[in-house]
Every structure is written in C-alpha cells, then in structure tokens.
Length: 256
Image (cartoon, rainbow, N blue to C red; front, side):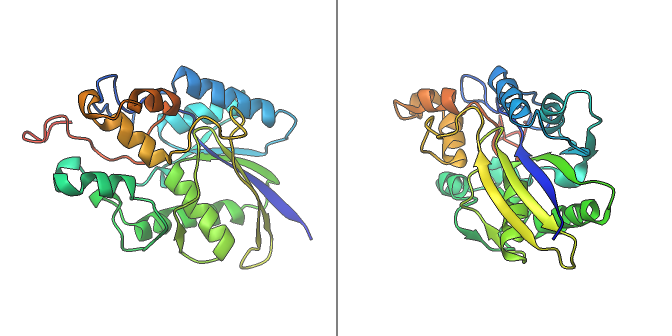
C-alpha cells in the first residue's frame, strides 16, 4: 500500500508576555532566539528529507518557522491553519479565569466548548479539516511539511486517530515539535500516526512537566503574585499560548 507523509510541526517559541507579565499583540510576534534554535534543530532532523510542499498558517511565527526548517523553499501560507481564537480575558469572570485558562484544552473537549470565550472546538474542526482535505486531494506530492499551532495540531492528530471530530486535548505540543503522519490514498483515507511531539531540542522533555497552558498561566500572572518558581518556568517555556486570545492590558478601557 502506498502512503504519503506529512511532517506536522508546531511553530517555534515566541514571547507572548513581557518581563512584567503584560501581554503583547499575539498575531505579529516573531520567534525568540530559542524559537529559532528549535526551528534549526527541526531543520537538522529533516535535512535528508525531500519535501514536495511546505505549508504553514499565515501567522508570522508559523511562516518564520517553516522558512527556517525548509530554507529556500516556497512557504504556502494558509489562513485556515491559524490557531484557535479566544476572546478578551475581560469577558471571563476573574474568579473563573485561571480554571478556564489552564483547563482550556484538558481531556476530551466537546465541540460546543468555546476556547476562552471565543472560537468553539467545532469551528476549529470546521476550518482545519477542509484544509487537510484540500491538501490530500492534490496528487502531486509525496512528502509535505505543515507548520501550524498547538490546538490545530491536536485537531489534526485527533481526527487522524479516530476518524471523527473528537478533540483529544491531552496531546502536548511543545514549541518546535514534529509529529509524523502517513496517509493512504483510499476514501476515507487511512491515517497512521507514527510519532507525536518530537522535540528536537529536548527529546526527553526534561525542561518541564507543566502543560503548555500551565506554563503560559505562570507567565501571565503578575510577578508579585506568582509562585516563587514562576519566573524559572517562564524562562523555560519561552513560548506563545496556543491561541489568538486578545489579552486586555486595561480591562476597564478594553485596550489591548
């Protein structure tokens, strides 16, 4: 049986909060130095692999990662692969914010669940899976690199495993990680998930035992309110929350 291969990556690390825990504009952030190192490590991992197509979301952090992993190749920017979108933090009652944030992607997430008050999981599936189908309908490639985001990758991996729109939130996706999927030509296609969350810069995942959302919460909480080890976890994390959530710098004015 002939199968094609997709290397599904998460973009490299970016800085989503400044040193005082204040949020920065999420859509335009570039990779950090560590994020570029993660992309370079993924490039070394795939150096001997002939890539027929290189696709990313249209957000700069994904495009930059793809360009570093596959230098000299045209990067196709697909907006359908953008990260799941949240609402303003001020739309969530303060007493519920930590639970909503940290638990946003826990367990099997229902399709009607809104991510931090914004886009639903069903809406995420509704734009990501047609993009995957569009890629599969093109017979002119054998091996593709797709650089996307944490929740987007979980949606693709969940569908590949189960063949349905069930979101398995417990897949961790480290910054710059690589997932390996093979897909057949039959209809519906048979998927083989060969590897998940390969982190070329930290293969043993020794840097942290926190989930990504737990790490991001540690970065967001003001330093004077954070646990003593929050700064250390923030330094290890060095990455952007898997969302396009708008973080209110001033909840009263609604400014971001």
